Amino acid sequence: MYLYHFGMRELPFTLTPNTDFFLNLKPHVEAMQVLLNALRQGEGFIKVTGEVGTGKTLICRKLLNEIPKGFCVAYIPNPYLSPAELRWAVAVELGLKFAANIDQQQLTQMLQQHLLGLSAQGKAVVLILDEAQALPDESLEALRLLTNLETERRKLIQVVLFGQPELDQRLGGDKFRQLRQRISFSYTLRSMTLGEVTHYIEHRCQVAGYQGTPLFNAAGVKRIFSASRGIPRLVNILCHKSLLLSFGCGERTTNNKHIGGAIKDTIDANQLNFKRLFSLMSLSVVVIGVVIYSMRAGGVW
Image (cartoon, rainbow, N blue to C red; front, side):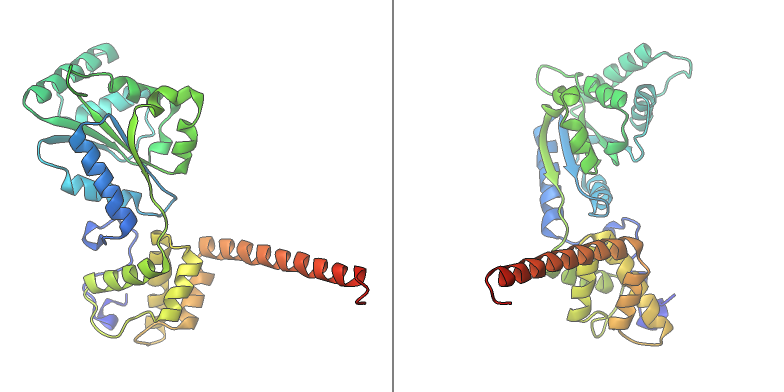
């Protein structure tokens, strides 16, 4: 790879959600503030949604690392589970020990007693689900019923949902109006601005150990921003491929050719840019047609 070539300790643009590379971008900071404030207030449901690649899993990992003291955490990264599997997963995450042959009613009773015991010790329980849009309908309802467990003063369990926009679409239907009304706090992640992409690229290079002339000039960053639409995951992919091409050519920085090659090799960036270009070309044809028609009608031709 290009680590030695560019004088880096580690790869700066990997797709794994490494919290060492967390940058205090406005949307990510706001999302963290919403999450931490909601947890401290003891709210039942908290929701963070965003398009694919906008950093939901990174924020989820950051939350796991910075969860306030006094919280017991159950983390489920893959919630494509039936209601029964969901209850088993929560019980296991909370450290419950039970016989394999107990039924769902017994498991629910054990969960309730365990949650009451933790509450008596002054501990709050939070269930964090990543990729929550994958939850089956029956499991979403089971999740709502699970949060019915409460004392006179507070909920015995809080739930944080991280999901794609499809989660909002599902919760918008009448079928889930009861669950929707229990979501006290929510936040929608946006893509990065051009200025944020510039800061993001520089930050990740510095954290990786790079010192020297910026690897991406202003024009290159602008092109990456345009091709990625400011989506962090696509920025990572395009930057990584650009550095590979620069290394392959023996260059010390990236140039327009390297970035162009990275964009060409990235299907998502390519397809969407083509669609945008096609739309602009279609619009131009329509405008030109209207102008020509007007000129003819006005006797100019």
